[in-house]
Amino acid sequence: MEGTPASARWGMANLLVVYVVWGSTFLAIGIAVRGPHGAPPMMLGFIRMVLGGGILAGMAALARQSLRVPWQQLAWAGLAGLLLWVGANGLIMVAERHLATGYAALMMGMVPLLVGAIDLLAGRQRRSWALVVGMGLGCAGLVVLSNVPAQIRGGHAVDVLWLLLAAIAQAGSLVVQHTRLRSVPSLVSATWQEWLAAPVFLALTWAAHEPWPHWDAPTAAAALYLVVVGALAYASFAAAVRLLPMTIAGTYAFVNPVIAVLLGALVLGEPLTLHTAVGGALLLMGVAGVMRSRLAPPSVSVVAAG
Image (cartoon, rainbow, N blue to C red; front, top):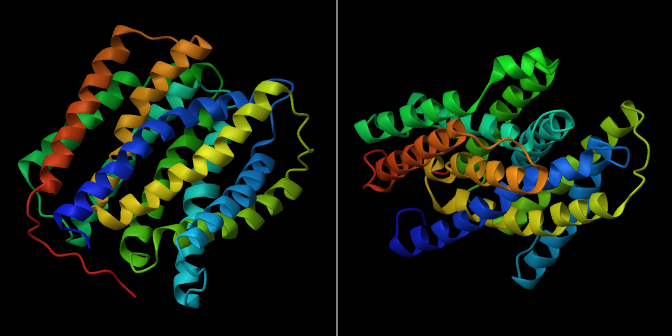
């Protein structure tokens, strides 16, 4: 249960996996969806959900976890999957056809700020200086790192909007998972979230008249990475959400941008400037502040619903 030293250590171990792997998935998405052989975003999402969900189901079977859950929990899993995969990941894939992978990751850094605001409004977290300062530093880091006017001048205003909506959807999914799916084993929850998102991706593929991908080696390798490594990382994410406070679990969106920016610069030659270094430092300091506020003994108990 959340709050015990053992669960906190295991939760942080899973969160470390999310930090590293999800930071690299922004690069993989960029490689997968761009160029003449880029995979159509909704089709890629469908493939990823079907195969990734199968991997998670296999892991659940090995852990002797039944996929049978009450229909109410299944409905909440569907909502969480719709928000995270279709609403957030789907829009990220659409935006990354034109925007830099590091920029997309940086824009998603606002997720913990949205989660923290929801937490405060819902009374699950008491305001503290550590939380306020941490969130403030995180916002400052995003301001330094992001250059929205330049993106708009480049003709990508709609893609910036997609990223803003993706951040809102991802924050909503995190709240649903933390408050409504805590009683469901993490592998089971992750499996159903992906499988229930799959038909929505398929419907969007049909609506957008997306063709079957013409795979080349980089696109196929990136898609395979997203399916296999992404599924394993999502199992870690689902466990972290169950074992840690929401604002701690949400700090992956602070760390992922730093990793994504570095990988984008090294692999794709995306700009790496002084602004990036300063903004990244501010983001990491924001992570420290948020984590300090939530690893302290809780003043408000959180009761899992359902």
